[in-house]
Length: 304
Ligand code: CNA
Image (tube, rainbow, N blue to C red; front, side):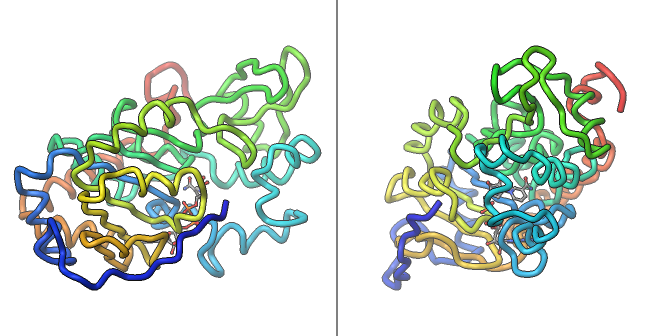
């Protein structure tokens, strides 16, 4: 946490884009110069699915955690606090657990980038697995803060059954390891834990970025937020968010598009062409059929 950069907006001419607006971004995306697009997602891409983010005033999780009796809001995602008192996390997990939520049009936009052969990698801070439910293959996503897709004992590392944990979470019961009796938690990354190896292995790819699209994040959690610094200086960075974030706006080809991600990506698709809008709608329609399934159920290995 912390280390925010002070953002002094750049007001000089652009280098790569014609302008710092949505039409210029679309024009660049259609050009031969834009082949490797990277996406960074935060909680704001999932709020329209009904999943609260952390920091939005009134609706964010941190605002609504009083009932959990925490010493401070971040404690719910701290491994040492979890070892002492797992109940607040399990209470929250019941609300956040995947299977209840449908991907948003913003998730379908990322799938559309993939279908068009533009997406090189989608880095997400979200633990809701909605990128996968939108149809992105595993190799196109890095779940930088882990997900509910796997679960292990925090003491001995033994695997725990996904369906059993889901049942226990939905009943408000804490799960304990079959092997050593330690606490079980989904493989989501808590403050104080390392990010998955795949995050570290893939971040070098950002050096090849022609475009970085950052959506629905306050860019306050590190090291995730530092990904914005790893693309070349010449790579346009586009922030789609309700509020300004990080240092986006300080480089000549930074574009800040303030608004709801679902609305802005639709406007961007309109600029890209009618076929983009049609495909976006079709991809989002498909997500309705996938709603409500957990990963094993989708693969036909079990039932909810
Ligand atoms: P955050 O700090 O709560 O910031 C969210 C940002 O999104 C804010 O700047 C909001 O203004 C903005 N926002 C909210 N709704 C919209 C919208 N519809 N359109 C555009 N912008 C919007 O969340 P971050 O992701 O930056 O923080 C990182 C944390 C949040 C990670 O560790 C996640 O694990 C964690 N988180 C994940 C989920 C999830 O999986 N869906 C939910 C809540 C928190």
